[in-house]
Image 1: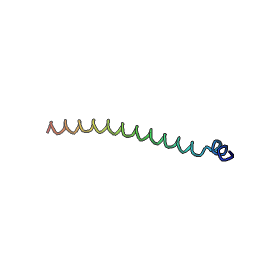
Image 2: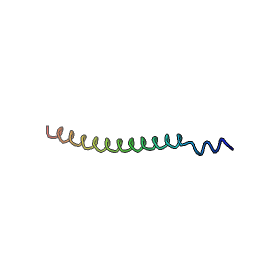
Image 3: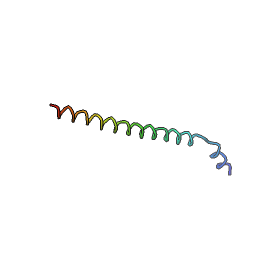
Image 4: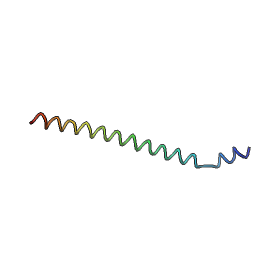
Length: 52
């Protein structure tokens, strides 16, 4: 029973999960931004290539 009380008071696991969620959100935002920039960059290079 003391083990469970100790586990409920221990917040290290919760902090690690929060950091993991923050890292996942940053990764999703970065992937989305890179995808958008990549598509715009591809369109720009296609326009330059067609103009040449």
